Image (cartoon, rainbow, N blue to C red; front, side, top):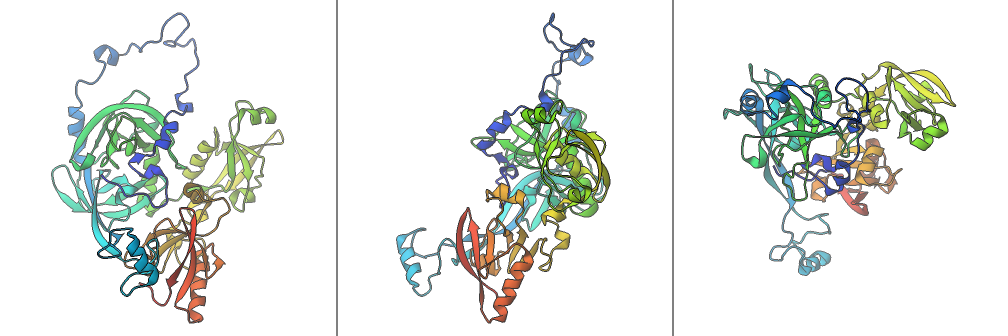
Length: 518
């Protein structure tokens, strides 16, 4: 499958991960650290070499004789996904002249009749084309719920599901979660073949796995391998990938990774590759992450993650020594903005050592556990403060509301919500988004999430990923700010509002018509 470049987010939304992730592929992980030598039965000791345990499986065979029975058992639940969408592309701006021709610049600069005005796509003609894309997915219920990657169906106008027997059905989107790149779809049907999630926490490095999907649009295909590593993190807050050497290619995105019991332990999402093809380093989002997301999407149509409201960092060995902490575990609080943590009495300098009765290993562990906790739930949180342990009770908020990414509260009057204006879907810039986009900390503005192909914003060349920092020559930080500037322009009889946008870090002004939304 050929994937569009992600509008805002990190390379984890591509099937091919950037070569910058190479360092991550070699990063040491706690889950892979060798166990200490003990005197327990079967443990390694100084007098004997390490060897495989003497198990019935070892005595019977080193590897499965065949995966055929497993493929036959689970393949009816694996589907091909075809999406159709309308994309806007710049038309040839100057008929008769090649693209980027200096004669085209001359005609544009001097405004010859019939020639579009403006540079860099800010006023050039756009054409709409139908675009098709392919991916994979799997059925998780007899009544037709299907799991795939969000990037497989993102921006699609139509989604068609093809089953292994050749049957085709239209699908609708129940909900999506860009943070884990998971989408939940639904087709009409009863008694459909389906598969279930397994426990990815029980998957071990070296276990056999089977990947099924639709690589390169070739139709149903199976590949096998082992789990090469666990707990891989690419660039997302909630990343928990199983790494596998099972062949995964473009088009496998959204397909299942099975264990030998026929349970889904991962959703194939990305590969590390210098050339776009499989080199034996693939990543599947762990099923224990996916199943929780799917439960929320099926229940609410969106995710509802817990939110503590602190900025944190890992405790280094030097910090642990200075604080008198054994083992260097925990998450140090660096800032406490307005939110649940502040209300609970958490302070900068506290080290969070326990959350809801469980030990906190590091910042990554805390973020995931908070996200998994129910919104509005009061939980006990233990901190180390001035060498003493204190237990506080904190009532968790909802992260999506705190970040301004909740679709349910959309509207121009809600300063923290996502909403549509002048043919654009806008959302306030959050610190997390700023970090992903390479924007300086402290920058405020609104990120263009989507642009309607037939809207005034598209006509003027605005694109997903643009950052609007000013409207009417005044800073903006919310949808209400932009709407107020638009209303002021209309009341003053002006036909346009002046926007200051940043694209790839470069600022430029753009006049957007306000006398009529398209």
